[in-house]
Amino acid sequence: MSVGTNTPTAIEIFAGGGGLAVGLRDAGFRTVAAVEVEPSAVATFKANHPEVRVFQQDVRTIDGAQLLGLAGGALDVLAACPPCQGFSSLTSKWRKADPRNELVLEVARLAEEMRPRAIMVENVPGLVDKGKILFDELVRRLRDLGYRCTWSVLQVADYGVPQRRRRLVLLAGLGFDISMPAPTHSRTGKSGLPVWRTVREALAGINRPAVTFSEAKALGGPIAVDWHVTRSLSPANLERLRHAKPGAVWKTMPEEVRPPCHRGGYDGFTNVYGRMSWDEPSVTITAGCTTLSKGRFGHPEEDRTISLREAALLQTFPPDYYFDTSIVEHACQIVGNALPCAFAEIVARQVIEQLRAVA
Ligand SMILES: C[S@@+](CC[C@H](N)C(=O)[O-])C[C@H]1O[C@@H](n2cnc3c(N)ncnc32)[C@H](O)[C@@H]1O
Image 1 (cartoon, rainbow, N blue to C red):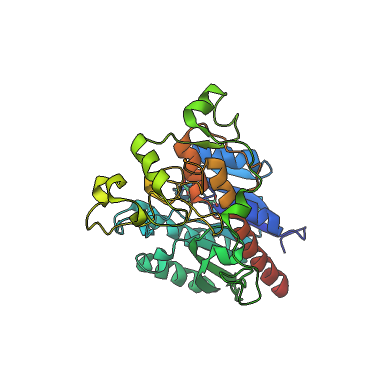
Image 2 (spheres, helix red, strand yellow; image 1 turned 135 degrees about the vertical axis):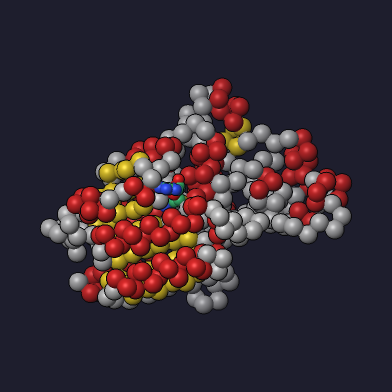
């Protein structure tokens, strides 16, 4: 373990508002530094992780030697969730020219400069498919340094997150293998594991009414109402939601209330303009999580979308997590971009176990 302490150290790049950081902390890591460029994500990260030194800057300008100094010259894990918009299946086609794609290789650069004992990377499954050229380069550079790399696409619902979200996880140990964590839950419960957690379980603790963004403003702003805030729905979307059946896709809606572009033979995204079901995990929470046209983000029974706070609970953020912004788009980005905290904790525990096994 790291110099002078039994607590393993972590450095996180692309740290967002701190979803992965919660998981690292709860697993037992001491995060000594984090790098993030977006101001409201940095403010949120700092508010919830005051013990971490946060660098608000482009990761490409960060010097590995400086970060390594904060870890006392020896680092246990480098953790990273590089931006994934360029590889996401939720974008209509892979934007090859998206400059954010190249950021994945910052993991290799900082591994070269810091030689952490382990590396943990999370991304959308598309990185091994549409982003194969970059992924292969990342793995090649890590292998050249002596890392043994394992990767797999995992379903976070199999790890106790009340949400369907498939994520690519890459784990690498300097001279040792790190296997993927075993699932803790299953869809049917057949394997003897508890069944997937549901929207009902995740939202059970919220007993106060959600307010719209304009109502929140009159009450002192979204922070004053703990971000239990939704966007106002247009009359047309309200009508669509009234017809939406929990868990069903928009195709079950009468033709006349569908958006004009979804009538007739339209066969595009099926997961929009719908409601969640109480007794299933939610759909993947994205930055569009409070917008009805961007996913099945309708509340299971109320005529509104889920609130930002409810989205955060579905991402397994702690119930009192503080979102240090008053701008709805920023709050949605922070929540939708996060690695679900409970999933991050399980993966981080797996890394700690392997670090201890080879110490
Ligand atoms: C997938 S999100 C990270 C989520 C975070 N790990 C969490 O669990 O909450 C990617 C983050 O990378 C940040 N980012 C994008 N480009 C960056 C850059 N050049 N330097 C530093 N951060 C960057 C984005 O602002 C975003 O917050």
